[in-house]
Amino acid sequence: QAMVAVVQRLSIRVQTSVKDKLSGQVLHVRTGTLRRSINRVVRSDEHGVVATVGTNVRYAAVHEYGFDGDVTVRGHVRKVAAGSVGSGKRQTVQGIAFVREHVRHMHMPEASFLRSSLREFEPEIRSDVKAAALEAIR
Image (cartoon, rainbow, N blue to C red):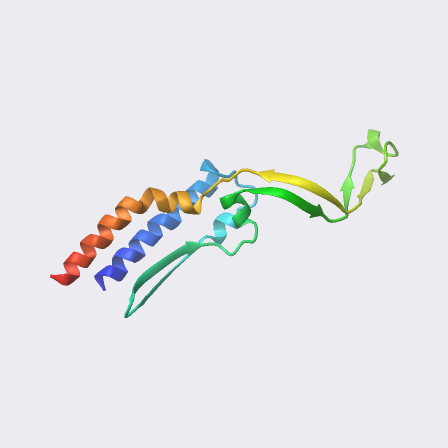
């Protein structure tokens, strides 16, 4: 029971740290979707206690690990300034440009928010879990 309580408390601290990093320390907030998606789960059974802090947002891994490669940009409609209507290769109609599907090279540097938070709390996690285990043995 004591170990579950310690792991619960530590997982809350790590989750809070991750959300803080997503509030401007590591990434700038645009919509808040990634920050809101940070969740935690604590499971315990006869083998031990495991806490997981993570997200199910698809683009989170690109920010966490970085990315360097080609991506396909789907065709879409874009608003353009009135002065650029009818100029260049773009097909435009009254301030709207139709952009064809194309491949673009993308380079996103690593901006770790999950692994860096875990690394920061590692000493506290080790000491608190060790203390709880020693207390349970006594």
